[in-house]
Length: 239
Image 1: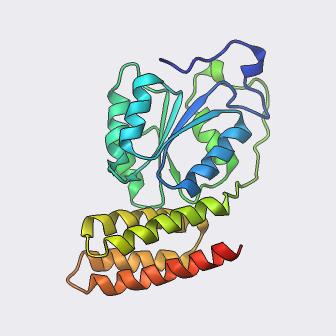
Image 2: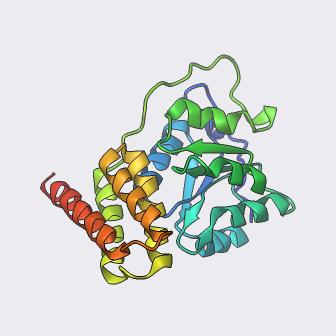
């Protein structure tokens, strides 16, 4: 069933809440990134639904048709490009399909899959988020009159960040020699490092990613990354 666009004035978009009446499905495995998108949706007036993997997103889409889908490209059960291709080929198709990633090389893959646009991590702020959606909606879904562009950034929940780091640390501790899982964790952490603007974490992730594709000792670099995650988690526990 579709998520309907009510005709009530309560759901008519305004300059302050330009996405009133819209439903956004966020397909994102990071709680930290999801929380930032949740705040942007709430601030913009949109309703938000979340799926943390491809299977959950597909189950959701069998029941509801959102107006906007935002798909992270690195998901635990596959690439977000798979879902983007399915959404673009569906009839009727979702009005706006956006991809998101912290990998600077992912935009080309997202656009090749058919995405309408790309949100780079860290997310630039509320104005960019709103503009990427509004520029692709029909005229009758847009707020009337002039609209000031909001300049605020959304600070995500530090508890959500800690949950993400704990998930990554536990996965590495359990499967340090599993190349496929290590690959997923490095992609997951790369996105988080970009969103949290954590340069040290990003460097450690990139080191593991480089070693994974060579004959070097993967366990050593995974161990160093795990130590860094443990240090981050100790700080988060104090906060």
